[in-house]
Image (cartoon, rainbow, N blue to C red; front, side, top):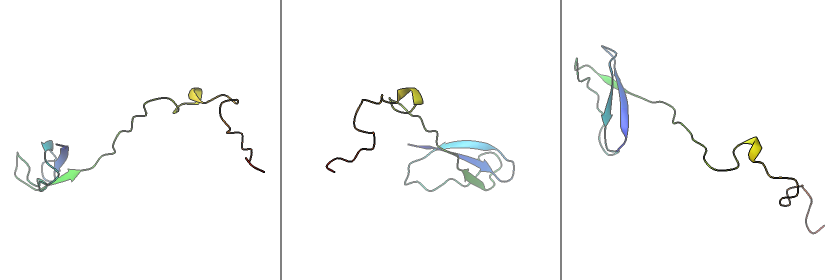
Length: 72
């Protein structure tokens, strides 16, 4: 189940709620019982494996990536 972050519009409290995708969004602050809004934040991207760095590039003789047309 994903964890969603909310912020109260009244007291500015930030809290997290573990909810199913099918659950309705929680809209009540647990402290002051005012309206709370779901916060959206960017998802971190982690690149794993070879090929993501300049040092991982292939040599000139590896493969036919020189741009030559095959079957002229």
